[in-house]
Length: 580
Image (cartoon, rainbow, N blue to C red):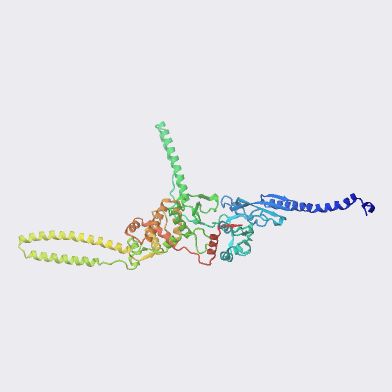
């Protein structure tokens, strides 16, 4: 039956059947277009909310959206220059998964880009950033976060296999998680972390001392004498001079004003130096030693407005010189206690071993007048000089009486001649006895010095205790280097003041470091020699002060296995950079 017989033409069939089929074929394309545009709009809205710059491309036919987001390397904001950004969380953190790092404000630099192909907005992931692990932990500690001992122990033992969600840092109240292990989707082999913070959790501020910093107290110095201005005397000179020679007076006034101006400038510089000397110094110690030192006036807040940078180049660690290593080691020993959780610099093992060895013979301290011989083990040969003197006296008396008796039996002329010979002989004997006594004393001093060098060695702590007492007894108020040694000051307090002085006085610091190098050299080379003893006797006060520093290094508390401090330090050593 034809189409004409059925009543429908070919045109009708195309119209009623072909067109609807064509429309149905276009509908998926239209749906994909609408869905893709809607998803793209949502993605752009999410990017705007997080203040993220990204390149977006869409394929409406295949329903694919390409998003190219930059990857950053970040570090915490400057604590002193960017106070507002440092202490407060970001106002608009990103809601995109993987963007927990936007909780804080950072100093960021782009290091690459990541392209994602997504179909829905919920599939978008923000690239994690790379951040130095130690700086991240120090930043959270500075804000007030508390380390989770269990999390750090688990991270150290299991590494990248640590379960997702394991807490490393908690809020100050301990009820919320501030830093946790994140899924390793975008980690590329790095440790993946997730951050969380609220402004209500911040318990510290810019007045608090940040991690890796120490505060050195100023030494106790006498108040400076008040200086009187010479302007009044200049005025009196001008008044009296006008009556005699006006021109000479004017020239004299001009020269005097110039002298007064120069003197005032010098006085101003001296006052500024004295002000810094009496100010507290804060030092930042990194893994590479001393990084910066700033003077802070007493009673002021720890902020950039009250801090002044100090010159520290001689105290930095440099190849070929040990000054920076000594300073960083002593500063670390001063700034760390059994309660210290996080510290950057590790005291070299050779310095720790030197500080914990017995290196100073006790007899040397006796020769230097630091210790009484009764306080030491028996080490020197004892001589009965009084018995030797009595024996010589009796021998000479016997010889004298025998000569006088023999002279009494002689005739008068021979007696006078014998008396003269006896007197000459006695004078020669007295001179010889003096020479023999001087030679014997010199030999015994040499022998005593040799015995002192071979005497039992004392540890540095005992040596420092006796040297500290010697410094106090020698001059309780002020030593030759303007470092006050008061009886109420403990060894740690004195070391803090010495470090303060070493930051400001390069010559003083250099003399201390030179003595420490000499001390360590003869300790490593078989013990003290006579030349070393002579060097100590010439610089006894420097040696006494250096022994205080070594004693503090000796007592440095080492972290025990299984403690939070050791676990945390080991994790920071294993992962220098993490993904956040």
